[in-house]
Every structure is written in structure tokens, then in C-alpha cells.
Image 1 (spheres, helix red, strand yellow):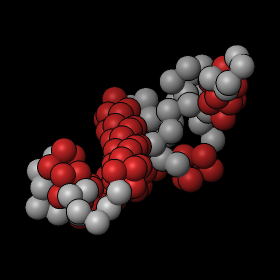
Image 2 (cartoon, rainbow, N blue to C red; image 1 turned 30 degrees about the vertical axis):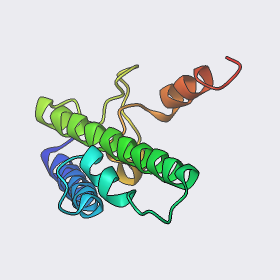
Image 3 (cartoon, rainbow, N blue to C red; image 1 turned 45 degrees about the vertical axis):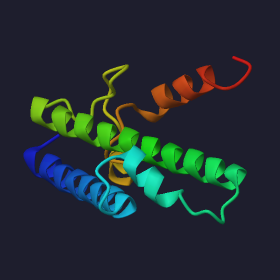
Length: 124
């Protein structure tokens, strides 16, 4: 991958990273962490315990997903710095440009990603 392409992907990754961080900050409001944010969001006396528990579980799951996405972005940025961006982490082959354009944080080619997903399906 040439330097111009890597710079373009870096910019896309940095924009995604900033967007996710802004979204997390907005969700948390003035709270500094997920526990404080959850306490603020779920202290309404009119809400049932089951509703509060469900909403809390959903919010934590969404935040975990966003944290995973931020980690994938950070890892992709590190691969750009190392000069290995665009190479599959498993087989070493080039990841298709269309795949990188659609999801620049990916670490695997389609074939290797499908193999991992097949292995992690229920019943395998």
C-alpha cells in the first residue's frame, strides 16, 4: 500500500474514532464513567426494576461494542504505523481495497474472517 492510500485510510479511521468518542461522551453527559452514567440514567422512580435492568444491560452492551470498535480502530492505526496495514492478520494476503474502504478497521481478508465466523457459530 502506498503512502497516499495509507494516509487516506488513517484519516477515515481517525474520523470514525472521533465520532465514537463524541457519541460516548454525549451518552455519558457529565458522568466520567459507565457506572456513573448508568446511575444517572436509571434512577427514575417511575421505571420498573425489570425495565431499568433491561435498559442498563442494553446500554452496557452498546458501550462494550463501541469500545471494541475503538480498539479495532487503534489496532488498524498501529498497523498503518508499522507498515502492515492492508495485510490479513491471519494469512498475510492483501485485504481487498473495497473491504478496507467499507470497513477500514478490519484485520482479516474475507476468507479468513468467514472461517473465524464459521468456527464461532453455535453448534461448532
